[in-house]
Amino acid sequence: MEKWKNRVAEYPCDKEFISRVSTRAFDENKQIEHDTLMSCFEAARWAPSSYNNQPWRYCFAKKGSKTYQTIYNTLVEFNQMWCKNVQVLIVICSRKHFSHNNQIAATSSLDTGSSYMSFSLEAHKRGLATHAMEGFNKDKLRNVMNIPDMYNIEAILAVGYPGDISILPKEVQDKETPTARKALKEIVSEDHFIFT
Image (cartoon, rainbow, N blue to C red; front, side, top):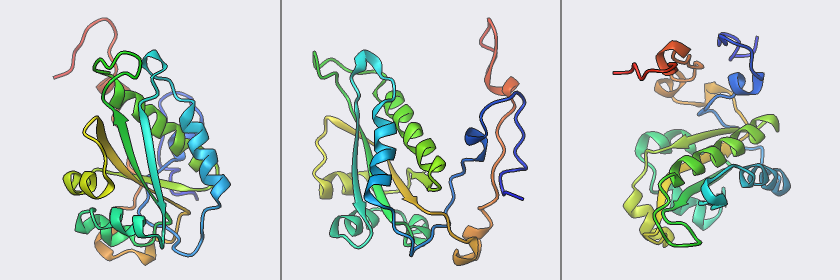
């Protein structure tokens, strides 16, 4: 039985949305082919954005490179614990202002999130796993990667082929059960905003 089978949709939707999980168990030996990774970025490239501004920026590093280690060193200790097996780390940023008029792009983070989801779903269809993290030192990362202030640092994304959870420390293994989601009635309302 696939580990996501305990997830149940209230209404029909494509299984790719339900079966995608943010695992922490990655195969440390199975490398990602460059073209496979680029196909995921290609999917990300076609995401919608306000004024077609495309504010997302991705900087990736492959395991074994100096840049990979630089990014890894900014992660909090818990994320370092499981990220050591990840094949690719990606820094996801969004440009704060529109390119055409330099005005504030209020939806740049939203737009970049849609691009990230496109990346993750393409990766999932190709047998890869992704896990986005906010647990890292943003100031340190900005400094060591020379990321200008005109960009928000949104997340670091771990990408690789899924591995067996037995390689993870016990305290991390316990977190590897696919999570449920809130019921639709908790996140969707018609006509009136009912949420507290």
